[in-house]
Length: 183
Length: 201
Image (cartoon, rainbow over all chains, first blue to last red; front, side):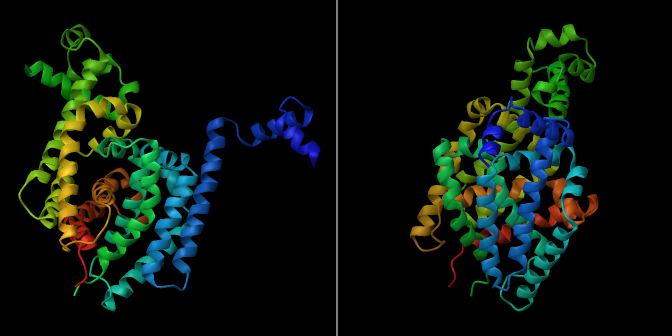
């Protein structure tokens, strides 16, 4: 055990060489290594969304959970938004392959659940797609538009981190309120 | 003073910069695109950076004054939200390459942006947020950090354009359906964002 830890740290010893050799066997370039890592990260975030969508809880709570899972995940994986953005602009076909087919079913489930609430008269009649894209937009935008937000709101890095932290609760309030019927 | 050649160069440079970004763009390519020779290009813009600044300022001038001046109008927050959403989405529909260009370059060169957009944005967004606070204090709107709402408003207008390929995949939209989605979004988003800040009676 100790030997392993020691060897992992020292890249010039024989086992380290083997590890690096194995690494370059599986992933030819640094770029590929990043891709694999990001693909796995992406899969785990999709799994988390799947869990949120299939829980037996009120739809309002699902919205809050989606927001907090999304924002926590992006804070913990700061390289992911840039990676997704690069894929979106440079190679959207590849991104398609990275999205598990499950995800499309989960999305359908989420849309049906939203529509059911509209039919029950709980939410304003708005196409589910518009609400879902809105939910994704308000969560994703701060990570992509960090530079713009820092300029507009005159924030430094610390201010921006604080902004993200309080965003989870503020967004829940806004997004749930955006679809509630006001009488 | 801008003459016809200068405008032609800026248009050509816009094409090339939007396609390739600052780092990828070559002066020769811009000259070719503008159908002039490189010497002529250098006569008007001595460096790539100067040309880029001109393109950037034009891009900023296309978007920001129109949407940010809405903040100064003497209308309710609800009307401002609706006007902001409609104006913003219309501008991007007319200039589809703009959001990615601005996003890319802003991340690469935030200082340039700070220099060119601060005066369009800062005072106007502050004005909007202060109006929000006043209305919330009167009990007309929910109590929320106005910055959070403002950034949500901007994000929900712009994100669908940046994330277009992703949205097309997950929603199974073809180009026509995506266009219809964006067209319908102007009113749907206005309704959602106005409702988002409304109090329950």
